[in-house]
Image 1 (cartoon, rainbow, N blue to C red):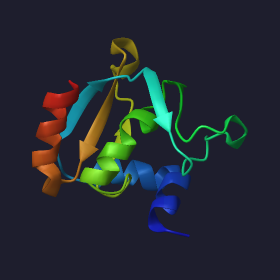
Image 2: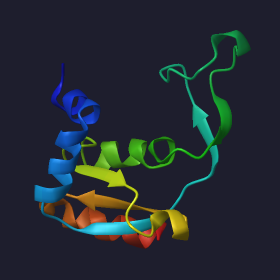
Image 3: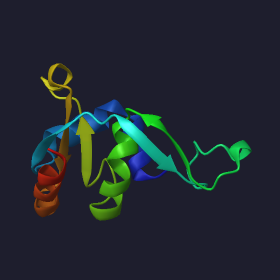
Image 4: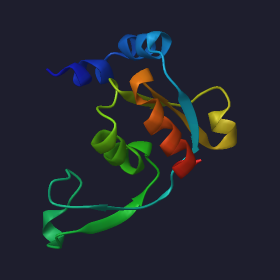
Length: 113
């Protein structure tokens, strides 16, 4: 089992990551909209036959994770997201980056905020 799998499956590990990992946090709007998936995605429906398929999603991992994992690193190690104290009220979520990714945090704050 990979480190990130252990992290995602055990809430105590997630809580410890948020408590002890130092780095910038940004608040972004909760994503809602269309996503496009290809054959490598588990949600791809082989019966439709198209190489790219689209659908609606409100999951932050569908919208933010692909770009963050490509440019920053793995979720739960280099960055992570959660709903903070006022996020549900404000329809936002909080993304925290490790300290070494401060430049990326600033870029994504400007891009998504």
